[in-house]
Amino acid sequence: MVTYMRSLIVSAFAVAAIAICILAMPSADAEEESVVTYQGMSFYVEPGTADARLTDIDYQAYVPNLVIPDEFTLDKTYRVVGITSYSVCSPVVTTISFHDNHYLEDINSTAFDCPNLQAFTDLNNVKYVAEGGILYGKSGPDMRSIVKCPAAIAITSYEISDCDAILPLAFSGCTGLQEITFGTDVKLTEIPPCAFQGCTSLSKIGYDSTDGYNNLPESILLIRFNAFYGCTSLGNIRMPESLRIIEDFAFAGCGFERFNINTGISYIEDRAFSGCINLTSFEYIFNQFYDTPGYAVIDGILYSDGRIKTLVCYPAGKTGETYTLNEKVTGISRGAFSGTKYLKNFEVNTLLTAVDIFAFESCTSLESVDLKGRVTTLDMCAFSDCVNLRTVNGMSGVVTIGENAFENCGITSIDLPSSIKSIGGWAFSGSKLTSITVPDAEVSMGRDVFIKCTGLKDITFEGDSFTLVPGSLNIGIDGSQAEVTVHIIKTASIPSDACNDGFTTVKIDKEGEHPYPYENLIGVFVCLLILLGIIRIIKEV
Image (cartoon, rainbow, N blue to C red; front, side, top):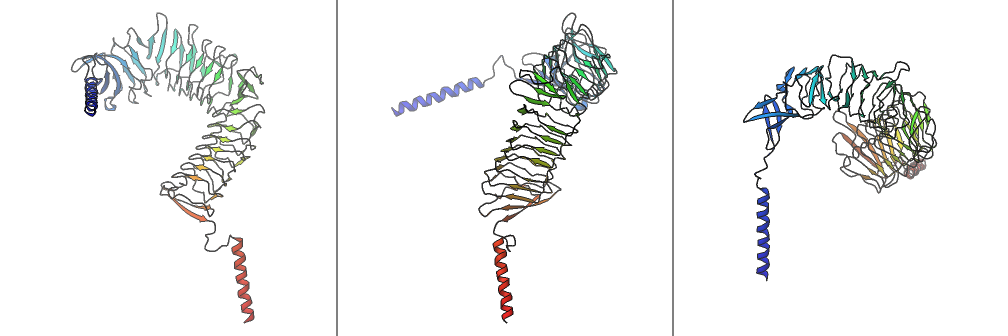
């Protein structure tokens, strides 16, 4: 029986080995993927074909007038059928010629990240055409898509007409472009990702001189992420009634003062207006809560409505130094107050329990926050770079302080509440802390909580249930040494690897282990008794 079982096992192994060998053998129909190089250009060649796609260009091969070949011959003749993302990327290139390429089937609109590119030339095949220096895709007999407008093209205004699509990054980096107009035949349904990103001179788009507002076509349903990111000159804008969705960072860093929301909009993603430092107010026909899905604008501030009411965006340029959260609001979106210029004092209502990610990031004027004992979570980067924030009241309910929550803040001293359970890594990094007290609680601290807090001199742990990970007490950095005294009770201890950066000196001050008990009342009393005894002896002598 044993011999039989051994035979079965050996046979099984043999069958498995044969199967592996068979699977590992190259198929007659499958060829390995390959990359070939021609005149400094790298091409991916599809297995079993002569179809090559440009993937990269050696920086030494860049010339001002770059020519992308129609075909080239090495071991055989290859046809250039495509250009992949970010394959042509150089400040040297000023023109790109396609040498009347007949084979191009697909060009990624992100391929040409060249800040000094002025024109595309010599292309007109079934799929693409270079016209007026701009690269277009042929959508149909009467329509086309805008693939790429060169960043340094010598135009200040452009009309979008005979167009049913703009591709991602189509106008990205066109710093000389000042105005966009729309023809009556435009059939755009979305503004794609990064379409006008970095168009710093763009001030007008569908501009209406009668009221001074910019307008997008009424066919637009969706504005994708980063669509107008960094359009610092863009003036006041009104959304079309067709619009339904605005994605993350869609208008981040734009220069407008007023933003008009349409009634049909169903979703605005967090931080869509991050860094709009000139934005003073939102405009909307609904100026109160109606308890229905949608949005409301109250006193120029944008809220989401419905069962859960959330402050979506507090305009960064809104004047007024003090704001108390609307009594009906239960949440604050990510980055809702990011970059506000004038807000100095913020107070929560009785409903808010969490301050979300990046909520008050870079609120450089913010000086005080009152959490009223209601807030339990201060999420990641909640108050990061609030350089003048010195007072945080009402922390008695805080359970979690997230990573980088108070990074680079102006807080000098803080007594953490007894409710605290977790302090994330880098929570106070770069802040002005000089002292901090950690209560007698089961609290865990992440790595580099106090890194770069070079003014921090005293950390006091009132209990012995704290947990420190390696690097929790790192403070100094290369070129900036730090020294801190950690005060602990008799039963507590500090792990040897709690400070492991090589730039921080940690002195442990353990209760009852002073060489002279000057800070101990019992010790002081004993010293007085000894002193009185000595005096009495002297008198008797």
